[in-house]
Image (cartoon, rainbow, N blue to C red; front, side, top):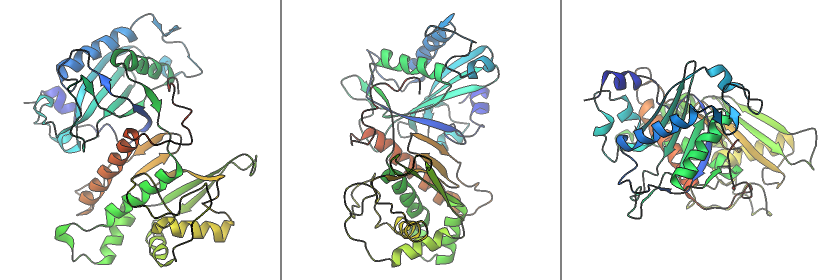
Length: 374
């Protein structure tokens, strides 16, 4: 049975929701003799070690409480109270307050949840596993948690990343996201929201579009430009109301498949095997490309134009490697929508983790030596 403290803790929102998170890619963590890293007893030892490090008089050469690098977050946070490392269950397990973390099945565990609690605020991180992989912990002593997300001020984040890299011999790099992945994430999310389940085959199109509008809501796509185009024009935000999103998808399905582009920009090649590549053959992207070309005389396939951020009612995802995830719609207020939105959100998270797992080159490949302090 879970303790009253753990019950109270899990009455809070799921820790991945409603906060802006910075994304990192982790190489496998070496357990150094521990039979498993995904055990609370083992994680408690690392929590104590990290707390001991943070309560020292010096934090990487900077006295705690003083402004470091222009960031006054730690100075305002107050005294360090607690450091917690625990296994993180999926959202269903998180909300089941009768279930202790020790009783989580391997399928329930999605990673490790780290909290660093100060008097006035609490910072967090999560190390997430690929739930579709059968080798989270291998026989060679490595634990595979490819995606790290953090919400910490820079000095604290530096120390935390240092602890991970030195303790577990892991390489850490910030996870930058190309335009193709951003728009692909949106396209696939909308497909998941609108796809009927086996017992919903007779749903009317109007109901499906209602689910889409209520989940995606208003949509903002940010275009960024390379310096040679216009030094003074760095970005443009294109806002699409939730009432117009289904129309974009419908229009995109009517537009003829465009020809192959030159190198650069969004790909036009139709490649359904990739989980990270968007193409202008996808309905929403095709309609958006036509809209931008018609009204702004810009081409999404131009090598100096890229999609740098997508924001909607379900998530905000940035090319610089930041994400904010909003909780699925309240089941008490929205009938069947929660099941659809939860499924779509699970798919969205899974694709982020797969992106961290993949070894695909990105335009920011050179920025992978050390992500500390960012």
